[in-house]
Amino acid sequence: MSGTGFFKAVPALKREGGSVSIRIDDRACTVRAGLSVAAALLEQGAVRFRRTPVSGAPRAPLCMMGVCFECLLEIDGVANSQSCLIEVRDGMRIRTQDGAARLASMTEGTAP
Amino acid sequence: MGQVFDCIVVGGGLVGSAVAYGVCSAGGTVALLDEGDVAYRASRGNFGQLWVQGKGRGKPPYAELTKAAAMAWAGFAARLEAESGIDVYYRGTGGFWFGFAPKDVEDRAAMMEDIGAASGIPYRMVEPAELRKILPRIGDAVVGASFCPLDGDVNPLYALRALHAAIGRGGGRIVNGAPALAVEPAAEGFVARTATQSISGRRVVLAAGLGNPALGRPLGLDIPVSPLRGQILVTERVEPFLPVCTNKLRQTPEGTVMFGSTEEEAGFDDGTTHAAMVKLARRGIETFPMLAQARLVRHWAALRIMTPDGLPIYQESRSHPGAFVVTCHSGVTLIPVHARVVGPWVLGRQDIPALLDHPVFSASRFDGKRGPR
Image (cartoon, rainbow over all chains, first blue to last red; front, side):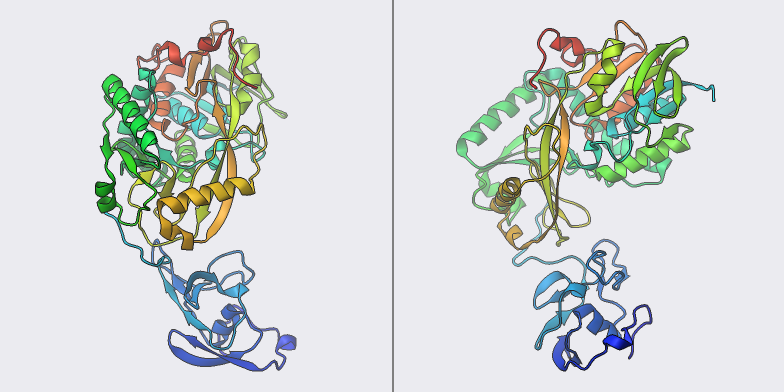
């Protein structure tokens, strides 16, 4: 498998469970079924999941168990999704997330 | 051991830390006793507003105290950052109060006029049409607003860290995990006793929030405070849309949106309730409808420290001179005053400052009429 080495799939769990097709930033790819989105992206070699809203620093998953909020992605149009807690589904559309979530029809106000 | 500090401050929250920082800055030696993580920690649960508008109607000294604090904040924050290395994210943006019923807006205008006339608090009422130009996403439920340019916000958690860091760098001693069991008069002033040690000081300041009543009684200080619970919601980080503080919503520099806050008599229960969550969320969405799409990430409660009339107490004990009580429920807004005015006073560098020398701030205003609870 490719990947950055920080996380490794446990060999005993690499069972044959079929595969699903997803899109990552408009790139079609096929990943193992049953993985979390975060694990699937790591297997695809992703090293940057998002940029932070404050400093723009690059981020990637740290805990893989729903605690650290570093793995946030836009998944099927929903920003700030914790990708380590969401299982890949066929046809899923995933986008790396730069900065804060944009709520629909948001417009910045001006100072009075 | 054997050191006698110029001042002992009991209470490591924002009030006590600001006073202790002020004592350090005025050249005094200080020991700050912090109860620890078992404490109710209003300082770590609050909303982070610097709020002036609407305070002190019929009590001009309170409006003026608050105004003095607000006007000092910009310079104070810069100085605190220089001395602590920590940016507290001070923003003097001004603030909006939003009205949801015409009668409320009328009452608001009358109140702001009163306070403006008595204390010179600047403000203006903002009509819905202008409000929609300033905040295009505001909901139709908002039918009027008042704006005060003195309002703003800080990150209260960084403020507490910065004060502690500055106290440490200034030679102060912070004693963590040290609930004060008692403060007693002693030959050289006062002794504060914890489970494991005794700390001596020429003077002592009680800034222990809801712990003050028990500590004050033996020192001749009657401190009628009781808890008033406030619950707060916070959302995920979203793109900036709210460039000013408001009375019930604020967007932090990081992008989270805080929804505050309830006022509940719940004794010492600092738990959260579903009913409050619904109420806060509903009001937030009425104010900015697109917040319905934002996800909440946390919900917590904290206990305000309230006197029966809501105003602070700044009082030196008559029976035990050198023992002071400082308590308020605006521990964030008033930080600069607590550092620069209260600090030198409790250190004995000056008599009670004019800003504080008013019957409305004395503990004796409650004599013979203890508050609810």
